[in-house]
Length: 125
Image (cartoon, rainbow, N blue to C red):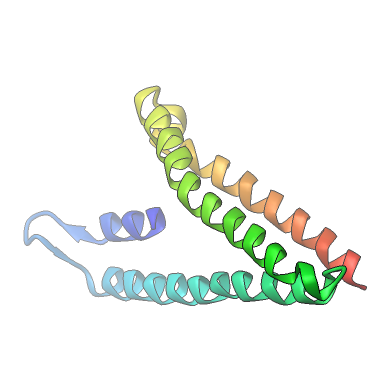
């Protein structure tokens, strides 16, 4: 979303208080990309349930495994905004990368998720 802010600021005309046509198109294209990316992100929850069903040691433990996976997902969804908000506040307060110091943290976290998911794919082969 910060990229949308940069696009909007670049195309903002202070005299008229409006955005230029290319800026409006860029912002809307960015919104479309974000919505598509969020649709792919939702697939992670369904995929985790499929992987649990395939790799559970017995039928009796499937319910417990689903519960643990749901707990871990909910915990991550509850804690991550708090952690990232704190990193954002620190980046703003100490002017780390002009206030955008939270971006490297998000990129590193994303790469960590990619590496972890690659290990899951290798384990399923």
